[in-house]
Length: 111
Length: 113
Image 1: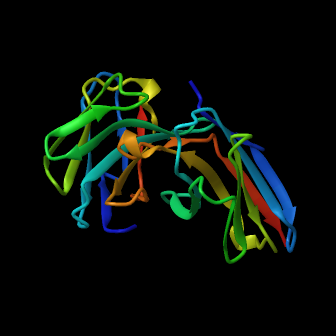
Image 2 (image 1 turned 30 degrees about the vertical axis):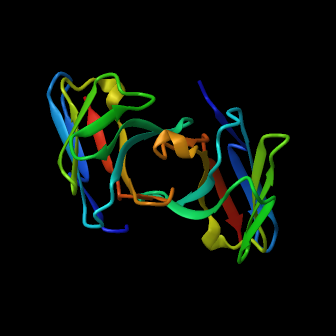
């Protein structure tokens, strides 16, 4: 998975609780992305980062925030999880070309 | 707003046959069109990609055909094998947009032995 790890790999939580997902890379790539994958929707971009402390919103950013304090780490936070945020979350990285490399994913269930 | 439309949603092909998946896009600023392959429980992996300056790109059994005027591109898998059974996603992006990919909805391919 091109030096990308995601943690946790699985998580079950309750509605209203905060959740933080972590993406860690060892490739020193500039760009990092968070996507969610849902049946019938493909992958949709939540937030992305183009450098340390430089982040921007994607297509489905409502209810999510991100932080990037180091090149290698990109955190996705659900401030107050809802059932509609039950999904599989993928982190991706890219360097100088347009190729994006995806991590193994985190399966999140919000009860 | 869905900017990349992918079809079919699912596809069943016999071993040795040709699998064809189609995508259509709306934004004429797109200049990078990758295809990703995803196996159950794994993240998507880049399979092959094309830019608008060529109409076709081939890598082994996988070929992308690109029609700029129709704003369509397709993936052809020749001599399909059971190991090709996976979900395939097309995507598009443009260089001025920090590489953000817009994905199609995905196609689940089953290759029967």
